[in-house]
Image (cartoon, rainbow, N blue to C red; front, side):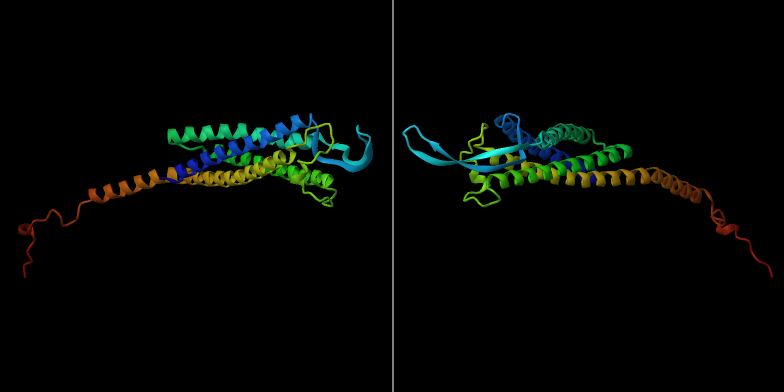
Length: 248
């Protein structure tokens, strides 16, 4: 298997995985946005409040509930969702191009390889920024819920505890955690694709440089061979009987 064919197969596999992990990031974020009624829990600020409530049976008791002072900026949730959607679409297009080149048995030109490398680096920075944003935002939300880890339960367990908010919080950690892991996998895949794009660029550059030189070298060698065959040897046509005799 030639080098460019191996690179194309690796690119197809990386693009297919990026589409899968992109969907695994977009779907949980979309479900979380629907459960939170369009509000963003990332980087939200709040505190726990304990109030005395009177129950219907006449008894009283203390109930703690979470008070959200300020919801997180919508861009904190929209940016990872946008990166996930863009990864799915761009990965599908690039994967189809790689399959097309693999079927046609030819690779990108030098300019196309350079452009693919630049786009891969841009998507790498976007996915890395989205992964960091989602991780930091989830850590901030978990710190708010657990009161900086002073509660007896973890952030994963807090989704099973009633927070007494007007949003559905029964699966927020599972959704954010799935999206977070998927986006970090997407970042690793785009790092791999950037390396593969650089190798394809190097291969295209090598082919472009060595391509015109090889026919010239063949022509020069062929011309030299023909020239050597065309020049007769100085004693090739002398018969032994025609050898001049020397008289003393």
